[in-house]
Length: 136
Image (cartoon, rainbow, N blue to C red; front, side, top):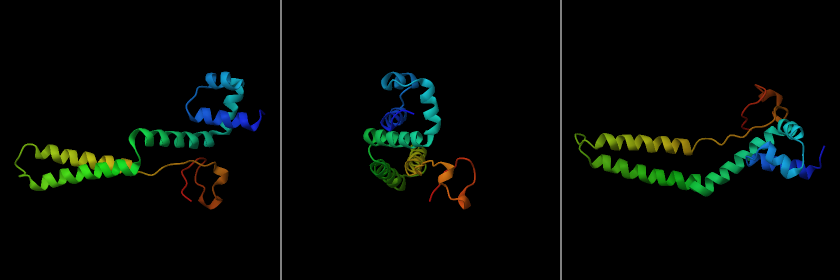
C-alpha cells in the first residue's frame, strides 16, 4: 500500500469530486488501486464530501441560520400582509402559496445533517442493517 499521506490525499481529492483518471495522474497511482481505496475508505470519502459540500453551500448561500432567518423574516411579512388582506382579493391566494413555499424552504433548511458510519462502529444492540444512519 502507498504511504498514508498519498491515501489521505486520494480521500481528499475524491471527496472534492475529482475523477479516478485525474487522481491517478495527480498522485501517480494506478486506477485499480484507487478503486480499491474507494471501496475501503467509502465512509470517510462520503463524510468528507458531505463536509466539502456543506462548506461550499455555506460560502455560496450563507449559513443555515442566516438562510432560515431570512426566510422566517419573509414569511413573517407575508403572514402580516395576509392578516391585513380581505380574502376576496385575487392576490391573497398567491400570498398563501408564497407562505407555504417559505414554510417548505424553512423545513428543508432545518432538516437533519446525515453522516454515515461503518457498521463495525455501531454498537451491536443498535445495529439494524449493513449501512444505516446512526445518531449516538
